[in-house]
Length: 288
Image 1 (spheres, rainbow, N blue to C red):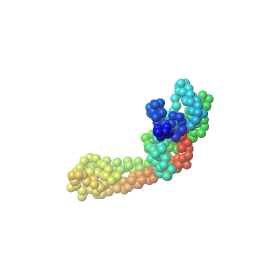
Image 2: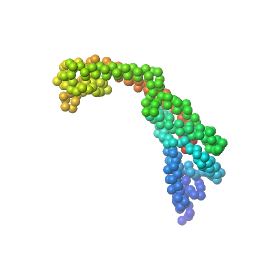
Image 3: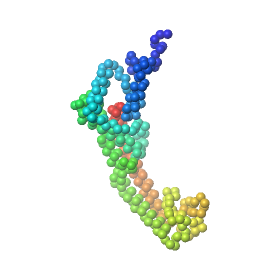
Image 4: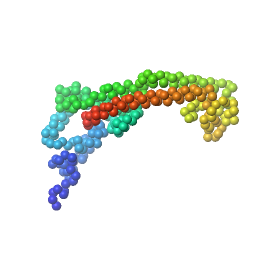
């Protein structure tokens, strides 16, 4: 049997140690696994085995020099600002197709971009100590404008800010005002002495996204309103009082208008992200 038949599948880079048997003897799988444990980004961990190979001796020497610069920075107390950036790759195809990402998804993208931006600035500030590493920063993208777009519109809890647009602020203010009026009117029903005998309990709730009162079934004829449900026992009807119907309508409309405005804001941010799609790919390469 010739020697070629003993070779296992080769690495993408043709090297004297590119075969499974030789790599096993060198504990290469163990080394790759240990390196993967220490990598911060998911793409780097996934591609670690291939990224470790270089095409020739010159590239290997270059890599070792970069490693020495990295070790020198760490020895001097300079920690690389990588943190634990999220993997945004699953979100990118949706952006390219014109989809609207949710606020929390946009926060993930902002966090990833902030990591990229922080690392770029870190290397720029240390270009004298690490000129080889600085070359990566020279071609790295800047995401400051996109980070601002997201952070100025979405808060830390993943909610779109009132300040994201004057129209959203107006609609939310209107919704809050109507919401308060609904609660005040329902509270009046709960505290009216003449209404006490009609109530199954002293509370109001929501049925079909509308505020209702729990009315005793046998008292239905004394309450002017719309029945939106009943209890499992049938002893209670959930009735939307006629005086509250229009308020509920106004509140629901304000919520729908607010959501439309939120979608418009989020779509605008996603459009900006799509326009910088090539820069995001550069960002992945930079972090990896």
